[in-house]
Structures are given as C-alpha cells and as structure tokens.
Image (cartoon, rainbow, N blue to C red):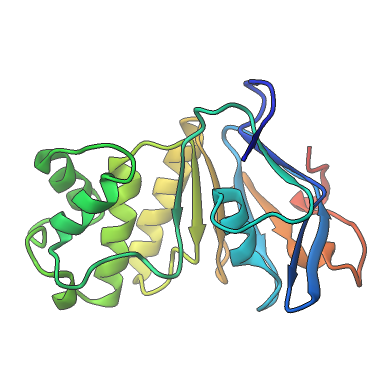
Length: 220
C-alpha cells in the first residue's frame, strides 16, 4: 500500500495499473481518481478483471505493475465480494459482530440497528443457514451501516436481492456519496443515479488501447 500526500481532492487513485492472469493482460495503463462523492460503475465482459480491480484497490490482490495510491493512511475501505464471508452456523447478529470486529468493535444495539436498516428486523438471532440468499446478502451489506468507511468496494451487490432490495441499496449508495463517501462497484444492472461514472475495463484492454469513460468526460 502506498500513500500520496494528504489531499481533500481525492481518496485514492491508480497509476499505470495493470492486471495479468494466466499469462494474459486483462487491462493495463489504468489511471483514474476516486474523489469524495464519486460513484463508479465498473463494467466489462466476463473475465475483464472487474473483481480483480476491486481486490487490488482493497489491498487483497497483489499489484505487479503500476500503483494504487491512497491520499493518506487513515482512508477506510470496506470490500464486499461475491463470497460474503458469513458463517452459516452463526446468527445474523453473530456474523455481523465478527465482521464489525475486523474494523473495531460494536454493541448489540448498533448491530440490531444496522440489521433493521437493511430490512432484517426480527431475523437478528436466526442462523444464517436458515436465511434466503437475499437475506444473507443483506446481512453482509449491514456492515456498511455499522462500520463507517470512506470507500465502499462492492462486487455485484445486487445479486440475490429482490426489486425492493435493489431500490433500497441504490438509496444507500446515493446517501453515502452525497455525504462525501465514494463507491466503486460492479453490476450487470444499470444504476439509476444521475452522478454515476462509468469505468469500462474493456477500454483498457491492450487490444483496444487506452481510452476512457464517464460519459465523455475526463477521468480526472
């Protein structure tokens, strides 16, 4: 993890970032900036490296070429991937307590409030094994409301959610970015918010050359 001088203008950025898998370069020379209030929708065909990019930004995947730079060492990031990291034998509250413990501590009252926020009131003491796929997703997403973070990295967060769940989550994304946070997320669905920025990794394939995104504007 590298740090750039503290700046209010951005939270993190990449410099000539690349991803290689199975001796094949998925994207290269990726340069972009994440500022407070940004909501990036990361797009690309299957295998384009969307998940790997989020994991690189989270510090969970090695960076062999290029850099991920954070504005200071106090930037807090929450990553929620395809695998939710839940233990089936534990209750929703116990799982959330464990997840919150990765960042600090929490009280049962705080965890119950976070679970209520994602529509799981009354399910706090249910073993996760008894919950539906959508409810399990909500348990993982409750962490966003319990552990405050500057940047949310979300890999297909709409998966298994019903239509109301998607509407609710879009509202959470809007609230987080309007409050000065930032979001980078993958999704096969459109995100109906006016300030969404598009990062298409296909534009950074070595076969296509360098190009960019954000509805015709500069990435910086």
